[in-house]
Image (cartoon, rainbow, N blue to C red; front, side, top):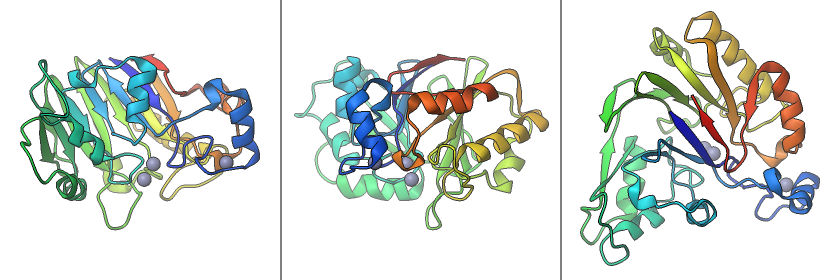
Length: 271
Ligand SMILES: [Zn+2]
Ligand SMILES: [Zn+2]
Ligand SMILES: [Zn+2]
């Protein structure tokens, strides 16, 4: 399974869109891996997780043909993860699409409401929204996908997904906090080959809503103890906020000794 990270920042982007803090100023100067856009990724050129407002820039920077994406999984309705206004542009007249007639989109009921509010008129054939429920697996092409609950918002089911393709399983989670007990219970028996974690707070401790690296290590430890991951599992952190105060190289110095990969925009990981 090939995972390409298009964006790796929290909601503000990095540098933050309006921010003058030290690390944002430093990122503007150093550029490279210190420039982070809002989080999403593409799996095996066919599946996508989240649709942030930077997607058009991702298309330009990575030479993507988004028309080829068949399945889109949305974690939650925050605008840095779901920007349905741009999905409208897949409809007839705005786009000529010969390859994949319908983009299937999956998310919670709340995500569906946000989708409906934007996609009212016109022929909806090029887009199909599918409401998915916590802990209820579904099939998308060759993938078996299961949504698990994250600890992120009180009034919405926010999802961590496991995506299983060809005997490989990816756990995709950001905006999660430390996993709720119900999720731990449901993860029993899974065998995860790659785990992507929320590390919004960088080196800082934080377990509710988002995580920092100390909390990522707690999740990693428990995954190992419960036999959900194995010795070959890749552990990956993403969704960084500038408020964590660390540039890319410092994040790598922090995470590498613990066997954890730090993402950057454009990184490809094979599991
Ligand atoms: Zn976010
Ligand atoms: Zn800043
Ligand atoms: Zn969020």
